[in-house]
Structures are given as C-alpha cells and as structure tokens.
Length: 416
Image (cartoon, rainbow, N blue to C red; front, top):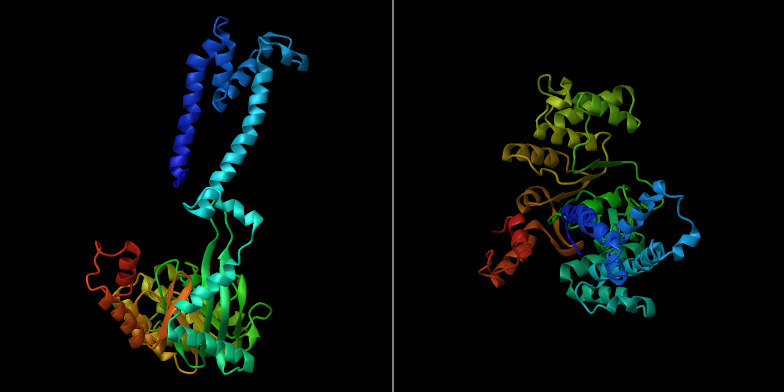
C-alpha cells in the first residue's frame, strides 16, 4: 500500500501506540463493564490491536488468580475463546490479503485484479513474443551487429577479442519489489585494437554488463567469450578492469598499489619494476614524489588515473573501464583521456560513460544502451546524428512537452 519505507514505519508506530492508548483509556473500561453488551466487545476485537490487547489483559490477571486452563475457554466472562478464534481467522485472512496486494503491485501494475491468477492456469509464450517485438523494433545497425555475432559463433572466428551473444541478466524479486531486467539480450562483438564506448543513463545496464563479462556476476542467460574462452566456465587472465568506484587503500602509496597488483599478475623482479614504472609514467603519476605519497592524499583525478594504471599493469590485451571520468572536473577528464589514448593501440578497450563528448574523443565505435537493450551502434558521429534526428522529430523538446525520462536522457547525452 505504500511506496516509502519511512512512511510505513511511521504509520505502523502510530497504529501501534494509538491502539495501546485507546485500549487503555477506552477498550479496557468497556471490557470490565459488565453492563456493556458482549456482542459489541466481539465486534471491537475484530480490529487486531484490540484482540491482542484483550488477550494480554486476560493474561495480566493471572497473578491475581490461579491461572488460566483450557477449560476456562468456555468461561463466557473471560472471552478467551472468542479472542483466539478471531486471531486465528484474521491471521489467514490478512495473509491472503497481503499476498494478493503484493501480487497486484508487483505483477499486474494496474490491470485487472484477477489477471495475476492467470499465471497459475496458463503460461503464455511471453518470452517469444517479447523477443519478436524487440527484433522488429531494432535499428538496422543493431540487427546487423546481432547477425554478425551469430555468424562469428557459427564460424568459430577468434579474430574478435570479446564476443557477447544474447546476454541477459534478471535480478529476482526481493522485499516485495518485482524482478529487475537489467540487461536484455545484448549481442556485441569487439575486434582487436578497438575502443568501444557504451553510453546510457543510470540503471541502463552498463555496469551490469561489465560485471557479467568480467566474472563478478553470472549472466541469467546468453554467452560471452574473451579470446575464445567462455566466461561461464573459464577465466581469461590477461584482462584489466577499472570499476566505477576506486578500490584503493588510503594508507598505501600509488607505487605500492601497482606492485601489489603486478604480483597478482605473476610479475617478479625486474619485469615487475619496469611494468610499475611504465604504468606510472603512462598515468602521469611519476613526476616528483607523487608515486610515493599515500593514496589518501591524492586528488580524485589522481585516484582515478591510478585505477586506470592498475588496470594496465601486466600489459592486458582486454581492458574494461566503467564510468571513466564521472564526477571529475574538465582538466582531470582531459588528463584521463590522454592516458586512454596512449594505450589504445593493440588493445581492446570497452568503456562506459554518460557523455557523448568523451566517447567521441576516445572511441572507434559507440553503442547507446537504454533499459538494458542496445538502441543504436556505430561510429560516434553516426550515433550523435541518430539522436539529432530524434531531436528533429521533437523540435520543441522541453520539460513541458516531453516526458521527464526522455528529457533527462537527451540532457545526459549532451544533446540539449
């Protein structure tokens, strides 16, 4: 019935304490009044709070009597039998009502109140219909990308560093919330030496996609291969990952971070030292004594460059970068872009972003991800042109003439 947890908590406590106050100041007086009709006492006990209060009121008198026995349930003066019957019936009634309300809120979303029951009697071919509708609504470039992936899988072509086919991730229903479809049948192929940009709003599925491909979470269905290795059964070790949030230790220095992660990549001795120096230089952290400072004293831009350097340690051939420059100022963003440009050669880089400006400067191809599905794919200019055409069809796109979600999407993609 409520959409906010704080509201539920406040209403529940008001009902709880309000019932106790009314029970003490009104209901108890009526129960103890022998002239008050018994029928109306039972009617008032239909409210769960009053039935519980009556139950506790009878038990409170045990200290003044010899106790309550099962035979006392038939004692009309105590009323315990009616209370227990009401509690038992209401338990089942409230359970059914709460379950029914939960189904209405999470499944039918305003449709007929009986439609959710159809799921138990008839299983419609929802998935097939849904996939057919999706294929019909796909842009030609997206459909071409799907067909290319299917052809690569049939030919067992390993010229592409990363291949994803019909990747899907569904988070199960939890705490009364409906299940969440985070990634919807995503098919992409990333050739060697390509920098691919994936842009979209929050909750569009970008981070979930990276988490699946890098092995942090398992896909619900679909396949993905990194240099021919199936992510479900094998792990590709020559892979660099820079997550959205910087996973750094405040008390370690930048150099110590790279030494630690370099050892994880089985680097030892002189090769480890050379790799650390190379990454520090690439990330522009080798000047002065910056690399010997504790990370807790770094600026946000320096921490982000260090995270990218960690992803580069060991010379990985596939690199995933989630939200490269989110929350950084313009100068820090430019410094990060220069780092990515230096390491683009002979590597496959997949990065996510909110900005078309960023992917235009860094990426060879760009994909637009909305609600977990790929809406458009091509070179950066084509993708921007795609959205410009959408703007031409909606010449007066303002806060008043379009939905809030559509307006925020265009603004986030730097098109307004």
